[in-house]
Length: 429
Image (cartoon, rainbow, N blue to C red):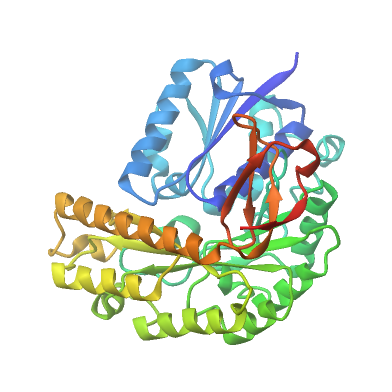
């Protein structure tokens, strides 16, 4: 009888890449992927713990899946699993929990449990798992997503050594570490062989690549740029102090890397940046934005898309400090602001501080920043009208239309044409 598995992902693009990798392993072992509502034999939940809301959602989903099929095995991994392992193990229905440094063993050990015996190396080879799940670099899981998408998320780095005052990520994902360039190239070639045209590089602190292998992030970019079949690359997120002028100059020189940068800011107040342990000032952040624009924009060229992360209501954020953030963002004119309220995370330095901001104040500041985002995004789109760009159209059809994204991440919609799916097309915005 064919066994089934349903995989659910919460949180970041890195989790999606890892879940896709787990899925390929289970599929190779004979498990068919099904929607969670169909009553699978096995459920795998890749959790998030960036906020208390994320924790609650993870718990709720685990309990819901157990109600859907009480006989199913439930496997839990991800950041919540690392931070609250004992809490998860007490939830009814949970069979296995895998933390940050156990992900390489997740598929193999899950199969041991599910099949009721210790599998041999020959079993793994017969099931096609030996190559996919060998340990690549210590405790770092190599991962990428494929299947049914125009783009693939490729994991190049994991963990973080920054220990910012508000953040649990270093505790949830461990120290900064990475997979060797040769292995990442092998995976990118597999992605290219699947017909995917665009790769998004993902990591917890992506620009910190090379810490465990002695390689550099720029070396990685250059190696990936030469892979045949991949036409476009994006960098999902990179700290402002790690996107060097050398990297910017190389990207601007004619590489496959797109004019699209997601750069965490978190707060536009120098007082708050120092207190939270961030490694830059607002002047440095502004200079980096201006340098990228000076190298990549020009007459007839598309504007660079800048997305930034901002937290509203960090401890100690007065109305005056909030307005410093608001005015700073308005002055640097990003295309998009990913706004979220500060969430008090146990175990972090900021959680112990007494000058916490009331939830109602956080919500009001989030709203003001979201309104600013709408205005800045509209201005960004208007500034690009009339410019020639390239769009990679996706396969999904809605109301007779299809959509895709320009290199600088503007969504373009047009009447559906099957001949354009997965192809990069010239358009005038």
